[in-house]
Image (cartoon, rainbow, N blue to C red):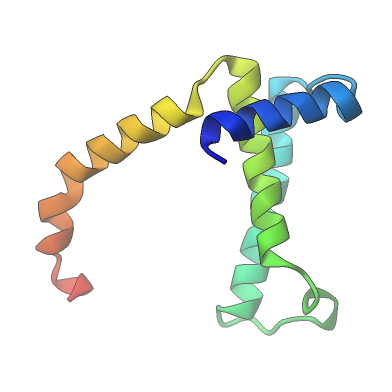
Length: 108
C-alpha cells in the first residue's frame, strides 16, 4: 500500500465509521497526544526512565500507527498529496543533507 492508498483508506474509514473528520485544530491536538504516547514508550523502554508496569504492554507499532492515521487525516482534510510531498522532501533532503551527514564526525 502506498501513501495514496493509505490516504484513501483513511478517507473511506472516516466515511464508514467516523461520521466526519474532526476539525484541523482537534486533529492537531490528537496528533500531539499520539506523539506523546510514542514519546512515553520510547523514553521508558529505550531511554533512561524506568518503565512502569502499566506501560510494559504498550505496543509501539500501534502508537506509531495512531500517529500515521492522524497525519493522514490532516493531509486529507487540508488537500495535501502526502505521497508527492514525501517524494519532494526525500529529494530535498538528499540534495541538502548528503554531504553534511557523510562529513559529520559524530556519525562515524
